[in-house]
Image (tube, rainbow, N blue to C red; front, side, top):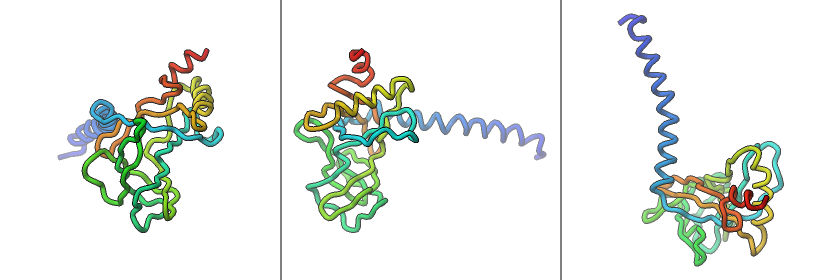
Length: 186
């Protein structure tokens, strides 16, 4: 076969691959959003504004600090682990087991160890940013900071989990989706 015969086929194949990869990524996230189990992750205070991060709300979660469960031996900074999820008595997500192999029997997250200690471990969860319209992000970040601190913190994120895939569905402040909260605050 000459170049003139296979070059157009190669071009068509490459175009299909370029369209297929993003379509697969979108379809996978949509599948998790429609079929995944919803977990509410209670947020924790976040560091001040970081000029390098751009226009999104930076999130931190209480469930990312794991205590009170047996920890696998040999955890190091950067280790990959699986966190089995459950819910506390208030309906917020918490890690019920941690292991280096994927556990059976429930939704779990693949996470990375940030700070291991003998009785606790801090995890880097696969979702820590809530992207939104560029003009609304600073007001949302401010509302999130004011409402996510202390014992009366009333900010949380709903995350859909299917298998080990997790997709952040929405950020809630004061019991309302953050965009609705900002509309009512005007």
